[in-house]
Amino acid sequence: MLPLYDPTALDLKKYLFFTGKGGVGKTSAACATAVTLADLGSKVLLISTDPASNLQDVFETKLDNKGVLIKDVPNLIVLNLDPIEAAQEYKESVVGPYKGKLPESVIKNMEEQLSGACTVEIAAFNEFSNFLTNKELEVKYDYIIFDTAPTGHTLRMLQLPSAWSNFINKNEHGASCLGQLAGLEDKKDMYKNAVNTLADARLTTLVLVARPEYSPLIEADKTSLELRELGIDNQLLIINGIFEGDVSSCDISSSLLAKQTKALENIPKGIGNLPIYKIPLRDYNVTGIESIRRMLTSKAALSNEEVAEMKGYHKLSELVAYLADNNKKVIFTMGKGGVGKTTLAASIALGLVKKGKKVHLTTTDPANHLSLLATSMDGYTLSSINPEEALEKYKEEILSKAKKTMSEEDLAYIEEDLRSPCTQEIAIFHVFASIVDKCDEEVVVIDTAPTGHTLLLLDATENYHKEIERVQGIMPESVIKLLPRLRNAEETEVVIITLPEATPVFEAKRLEEDLTRAGIYTNWWIINSSFSIVNTENKLLQAKAKSEKVWINKVYDIARGNIVLLPWFSADITSEALTKFLE
Image (cartoon, rainbow, N blue to C red; front, side, top):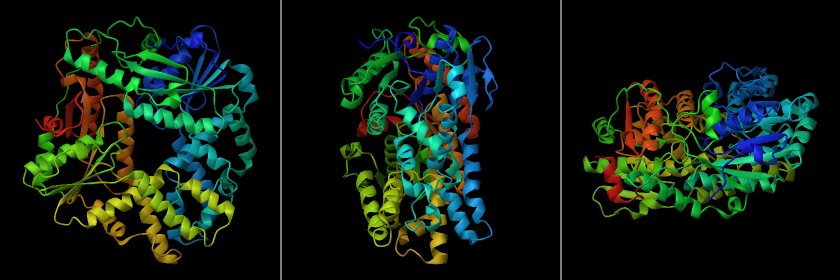
């Protein structure tokens, strides 16, 4: 049995970084750690640079970027930094000097390259660095806690000479989402000191947070390995949300326990060797000081908080009927990893076939679960895209062109740039485009949607290349044709998928805003894996179901009532399981 996470019993260092996939509870764990240490008399500074931060909700306090003393916790100061705003300032500092000197299309391309997640990460790191290297703060506080951590991609990029050069101005590979760091040149030494502090086990502890589920554990393992390769070895792992309730009177609770146990028995070896602690599943939203304090104790009382009734929801079959009746030709399911995109794309495809449509389903599911489905069904075809193979092919194409003209330093920059999440999206989008291009007579359902940033990056790159004709053949004809189709609301539908919890809802909202920025509007949201509509006798799960309603109602308002609510299922993906979603 895993030991309970108790920060007072661990040798935690002055700088604590919490990291993990969205929705695993890293902000809650960081807050609970901060309050626990502050309650024992330590001076604590808690800093959020997470763009999806809900720190204000958690503390029920209006926060700023200067630091706010938390009422009832006299030793705790909380800061909420906005890396998106910082990224805007950074973008202007880089692009501003070129305005009026370069064509407008070039400026547009440069701005889009500096509008992605990687630039936000760099801006967030810039904010981290101010606090990691501030000697006054080092003396003033016993602990400085960050509720997010830089990625390996950001840290490697900072160490490349070409990233600090004038590279963005001569970018020829058309994939970059991270421009030069010249706008931050005067802070280069500070960054170097910040990276050294991160890698110093005497000063820094990295706290990985995951759920007892397959996908978050794989993600945590990747992050752990990536950061260990950069010398950040002082790591520990928190498994948040372990079910410990009574399973004797309820099939749902016994299924949940079995599923979690299986995931933990197959924990990846890399994180399996770290010190591992648990936080049990809680039956309440972690908002307010008392909830934060209770999170790390095993004696949390069940919540008696009254929650408003759900405002309403639709069934998946009603969404399928809408898609069929409106003759949608390209359907994407979109959401952060682990929310059920692949399963729901398959369910929608199955529903459309039953409506008499010819459907081609294409998926990036790495486990290829959908190959288990019957492929002989009339009107249904399936293809699978291997994201790793698509990325490797795309990288080879880009690098073979770049090697003809570029120096070793610039090539190193491109190789790192090609490891960014946006590059993988672009590579997959190229393959999707070629599939959609061949399916004019069928409805195409795809389990991953491009982000607005990717679309704008492709769009801006196309305009840029049209004008100056520096790159030939990078943009296939199928990609050029698909971009306007995606913006045609009569033809295309992007369905947003989320979970009934705070962070997944905030993240999904940001995805929607990003699509809107690219001219793609969404109508429908699906809330997956809800305990609020399952029949459970377990008191813990009943209370959790109650706590979900605030997030279901929030999504109802965002989507103007166009929401589908699906129950938590324990079953693996099979044809029979997909049919259940449509009942």
